[in-house]
Image (cartoon, rainbow, N blue to C red; front, side, top):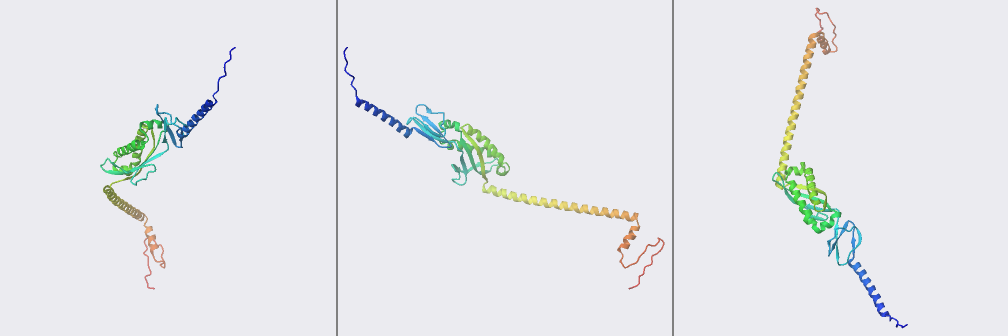
Length: 289
């Protein structure tokens, strides 16, 4: 049988192959550490943009996640309660603040409104919001809808009603309409608070003068009612006195002895007296003492 020469070994080539595998693994680990990990902090969700498939529909929950390095890009969306504030005091809002807004009323006046809108992003639709609106949804959605709808609702009320009488009713209607519009954009409204409503200086002065006049009218009406009550009281007392006198006269006419009794009661205590028959003239001692 013919004998074949032994297959030559290439130890140097085998060593190089192992080194290449090790280098490749090291590169992969380095890439993962560099751009393959996504850390989602509390109160946030992760959004993944894949260069081949676009924005992925599944949001990443809180925690550490893997992604394809440099092929996929991650973004964070805050799903906690956020605050959009409109205030006359600059920078009053904790997260996002804006100037106090002006709104027309049904009676042709203009009021200044300070309001706070509390909301949060729908956790299960954050990727859809990011894809359709982007990260600046507060400016594009929250601010625009809030300011326009607050103006629209206030326009249905007079200035004095929205200031005091029907303020709570207006606040309820504002919440209803904004909640519906926010939901269409994957944002959940928690509450709209009308914090302060102010008139123009001219209208405020007119309101104050009107209130002073109404108070004077109320005071005059109160005094008139008091006078009528006092008059009625005196009439009732006079009628009662007249009735008492009438009854007393009838009693005296029916009982003449009562007159004698009252006469005796009114006499001085040192005068002696007695009851005489009807046909006897009483004799009194009128001598001096």
